[in-house]
Length: 324
Image (cartoon, rainbow, N blue to C red; front, side, top):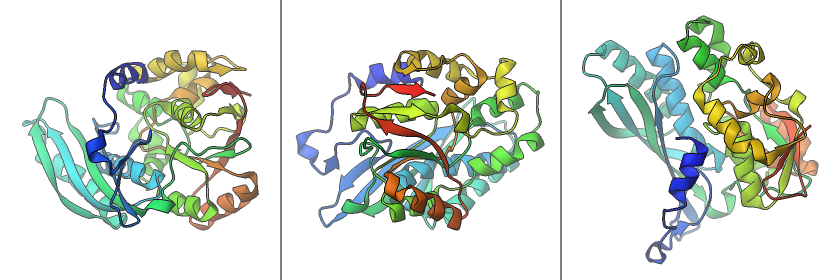
C-alpha cells in the first residue's frame, strides 16, 4: 500500500485505548508493550511476494526484512512465526527452499521459529511475525532526532529498481547478487553499533524509500533535514536503469507523495529518484550527535557493517527535506 493510501486509512483508525495502557504510543513500525518490570516487548509483522527468482534468497530477504523493525528499535529478536501464502500448483521444492532461507535467518538472529500460518493463494507471499525484547531505557525510537545530528545509512539503495529489472528480463539474478546478499544481511550488527554510539533516532528504510522514512523521522521529531544527494550510496547500475524508465509503480507513488516535502532539487532525475525507490530489507537510517558520529562509523566497521553519512538534521518546517 502506498504512503498516501496508508495515511488516509490510518487517519480513521483509533489510537491505543486507555484500557491497554501498556502499549507505548509511538509512530514506529513496531509495537512496543511495556511489561512493567523495566522491559518491553517489541512486535512487528511483514510479508511480501517474491522479488527474486531463487526461493532460498527470497526466504532470506523476507526474513531479514521482518526482523529489521525489531533491530531498528534496539531490541533483540526472541521468536518468529512464519506467514505463508502459496499457490497449490507451485513447486513444493521451491516452498521448502523459501522456508529454509527464512529459518536460517531466524536462527542467525538467535531467535526461535515457533510455527506460523499458511494459506492457499494465487500469488506466493512469505514473511514473519517477530517478537523481540529490550530494556525500556534502551529502546530507540524514530522520534528522537535533534538539530545538528548527522544522518547515517547502513545499506545502499536501489533494490526496488533491480527487482523490477529482473522481472522485466533486463538483468539476471547473477547481475544483482551483491544487492541480494546485502538485502539478506541482518541489521543486527548495525543495531549493536547504534546502541553503543547512543544514537538519538533510528528507522529502517523499506517500502516508502529513503525520503519517505526520513520524513517520518523528521515529523516525529519536530525537525527538518538535509540530504547530500551525491553521497547517498546506490547499487551498481541503479541510476542507469532509472534513466531508462526501469522502476516500479511504488517509486512513482512515493515520488508523487513526497514531492511537496522536498526543496533544492526536483524528484525527476536518476540521482533523486533513487531516494524514493521502495526498498526491501533496507538499511538502518540513524540520527547521531556530531560528537558520537565517528564512534558510530567505527563501530559499524568493527562489526562488519557499512555506514554512509548522507545528511543532517536542521531547523526548518517540520518534515521538510532539502536535497543538496
